[in-house]
Length: 310
Ligand code: ACO
Image (cartoon, rainbow, N blue to C red; front, side, top):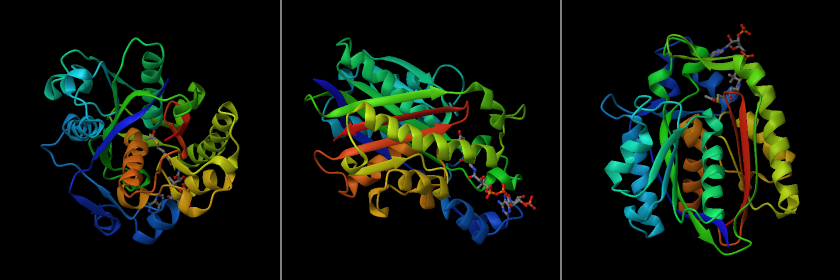
């Protein structure tokens, strides 16, 4: 047996903030944002909706989709850099709200690579037989740590969440290989400042992302004994279309084999990969037996990639 995704769900706030709306808030314009990032609009949660509310909606759908009951969940991992508060964690809030009475629960923080870290962590518990079902969620309310007066960052981020249930699947399916990594020396390029706002050296992060996304995608294929030709779908972290395009080209994939949701949701950090995964799955683009590469990078600096067979 191996560990794979047996249920999935996502949640996105209804309110849409377009590039044209941003033109009225900071010195920017739709053309600059679209050509430099690929983003056209993003979702923003209202004041009464916190990270745990978004996570709850996504998680509830994932458990229903897995066709199990909340009491079956053994472990809840929530990847987020925008928890409601440091403690109790979003994971513990969900444990109660969902009724996952027997689940252990914790948040984990690896910025935009957080969902990759969460998936790989949960996989260990299922592989070794300690747990049967794990709920892994990537969720952010980045709007609460965005400086809406800073055009360098305000145009990039959005709110949302995606969740998966991991469980046992037959040998040869599910997670085939993974790579996680970190380089703390790059922490200065992307961090939360003393005012709690996101600060970023865009060019440095860009260079790192292009290099790391490509390398990690290739590494997980080698580890799984697969070649680039075997890949049916690439789901990269949705930070910037130019970074995503570089990853796609590194794997020699045609456009239709890469998930693209950045134009609609912006960069939702830990949530971007699971949101995209659910979107492609619901659109019927992910089919039985498909080989999928998930790859992300983020503040820390951190990175992670997974090769899986659906
Ligand atoms: N509107 C208009 N002009 C702008 C804006 C804006 N919103 N933002 C910056 N500019 C200006 C700059 O001031 C600069 O002007 P100057 O040449 O007069 O100094 C000019 O546009 C070019 O700026 P660059 O930084 O060179 O633009 P670049 O092409 O590098 O694009 C971007 C900037 C989009 C931020 C890019 O560097 C990028 O995407 N980097 C990676 C960001 C990323 O992926 N972050 C991930 C965060 S993940 C996490 O963990 C939260």
